[in-house]
Image (cartoon, rainbow, N blue to C red):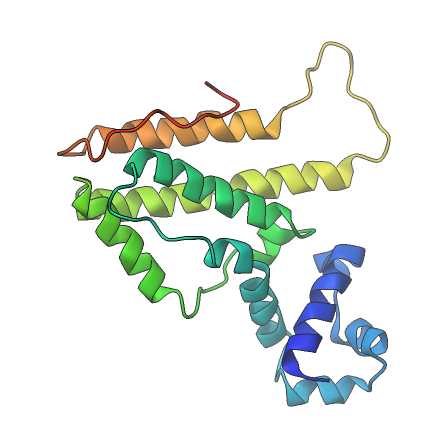
Length: 199
């Protein structure tokens, strides 16, 4: 048993039982080891959860970085969509991620900021827009995953339409982008607008 095996099995446990029920006792039983042996790899449950959050973000964290010829608007939208897709890959993915501190990601963040700045987006507005989009995405997925947990066969009244979470997410994301565009000083490389479920 190594650290990677523990994290992988912890994420599988998360998918099976949800974040509320994840415990080192359950994880140890799942791995077929004594609970104290987990502390060789993780001193506390908080350390384990942090490692789980980092591993769960791998699909987004390993996504290609923007290149100078990319359209910054299309990239900004896709970056948020990639984040949302990754959070949705795991049960309670947004709750697991919320409050976690990204580690080893500083170089990627600097690259993204430099890309936006070179496209004509002022640095402060780029930082605030990325922060707003990130927190907005986490909030949207929190609500979406909470709704999924609550759906136990109950149906909504006929006069209450079901919320399309993806459409709602795209609408809000477009508003964030629209606000950011008001602060840009250059158009950046031209390209066709990205497709989405909103437009």
